[in-house]
Amino acid sequence: MAEPSSPLQSPAIKAPRAAFYGVALVAFAELWERASYYSLVALIALFAVATIKDGGLGLTNSEAIKISGDYTLMAFGLPVIFGFFGDRFIGHYRAVVLGAFVIVSGHALLFFGDHTDITTFWIALWLVASGTGLLKPAMPCLVSSFYGQNRMRRDRAFKYYYMMINIGGMIGPLVAGLIQIRWGFDWAFLWAGLGMTLAFIVLIVARPLVPTTERGRPGCEFDGIAEPPDPISIDRVRFRINTIMLSVLFLLFMVWALAYGVFAGSATTELIGKDFVNRDILGWTLPTAAMNSIEPAIIVLATPVLAILLTWLSRRGKFPHSVLQMVIGGLLSCMAVIMLGLLATEIPMGVESMPIIGLWAFVGAYAFMSIGEVLISPVYMAVITRLAPRRQQATWQGAVLLAIGVLGFAVSRIGAYAESEGGVHRVKTFIVTGIVAFGVVVLFSFLTPFLIRTIQRHNPTPDEGKADLMSELEAMKQLDASEPAVGVRVNKSKDP
Image (cartoon, rainbow, N blue to C red):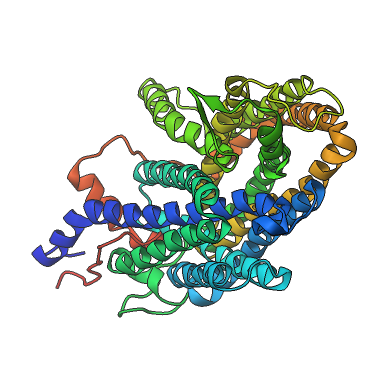
């Protein structure tokens, strides 16, 4: 291969910075998508139980929890279908932009339509859930595409990406709750839609930075650039082993999703916070909807600390493998569910509302769940981009969301059972679920050494210790055996 000419060198040298800007814009759009989603999640149960006079649906707690669970099933179940659609037919970038537009349409219907009409309300929820199904599984694939084989930079990008997710999850319910209290549900629904509109604009602006082969349809040339071959797809042994490893880790992820769903996904915890947690802070009462901001706020604070700790361990050759991180995250999350059950023992039977649980004890349970989430959710997203073939990654990401959705639907019924008969089943629900899930994760811990050896044997990690310019350029030029890297063109001409 001829030496790179000056025109090739220039975009290649700029590629790391261009990739950073691209990931930053995509992550910023994801921030607003999550702000939109979590605002709506925080509002659904409150809107359903609000009286008709107050602009709500006037339903019971159990009925509201079921509606929340149905929406969770839609939002997390549709991505496996639309993820396959993005992988095979329209491509990841187009799926993300189309999804953003559909979400905006759903929020527009919530604000401009009569959302107190149950039919209009469900149509709007279906639109938002369908847009989420298009956008959500394709986003991690888009983030991964910016860095090719450079795992060091790709892993760092996923940390930033997940941090932006939780910033969105933190500000969304907080602002939505404040708006709902001051101006009502109409304007709270509008807030979520405006944020998603901004995300849509940002995604359009970010298009020039998206790798060329990600902009078009899968398997087709775009702008004269053909899609490079995928090394995992053409190696049948590696493909088979990686599929088995992803499936095993998927089961571990589902156990965590069950614990997370019982803790935070069934709306039971939100209702406990509304009725039984002392939410006074220096004379100011924390809005109920803002309780949904506790978990993402802890994640935003904990992620830099964990990143520094992992960097310190890495420099000493003790960086924990992804599988080990997932096991630790699962154990911490199960402990959070058990802690919540112990806090629920303080609630007197037959009492509908009493600020009996301390806010900081409640936040402590959230801290275990939040740190556990950081160690398992973004880690599994990164594992998928490493082990799955390029044109199956969004489908795998969708399968992850489907697992959360199915379990979310199931735990909504579990939550309804816990809240029935005046909440007499709360303690049993939390403690039994937490102990069973904890035991399963402990069993997975015994498989950890075998899983790590198998993954490393079939997916050798390239030497990433050198971070100089030439090693960066060399890594980026390996397009024929890796995912595309942003801003790079390959000179395939031979020396005369």
